[in-house]
Image (cartoon, rainbow, N blue to C red; front, side, top):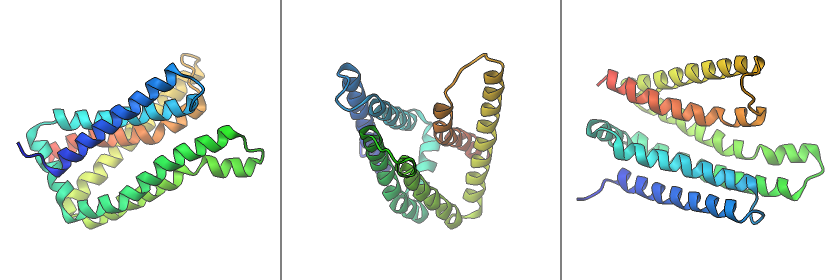
Length: 202
């Protein structure tokens, strides 16, 4: 059976996720070679990549057809071209900034600049997403904006409830960990919301 370009890319993503997971496992078994922080990054990449690959495998056929239509549309191809450099920059900046910070930087302003380097890649991806939304037709734009709005509201409510539980000393989540997970949760919420929004307009 001939696979579509989207399915081939998802297969590659799944293999990359497995490689990242293997790297994280090796790091846990042999501490000190890369660093505990790097193992966390590898684990996160494996989780996200594996989740996307699994979602593509389990999604209904009608949903996969619609995703492939978006993927192969002129706007979708332009989005991939514009988004890919940002993702490469983000991954490289995560590894690079983690390495430099572990090496030790005395200057606080310089350490701050190095720490926020991955944000440049995410900003690139955000601009690509905005340009994509502006290129598509009104129905697709409505689906995208509704999905983003729902995801933002759900994540905001989750963080509000989490903050209340934190104040009540029911949970104890480190502030850095909570802030780092905002963007991934928004992406996950957007993907889930888009499934139901597109089904509504089907």
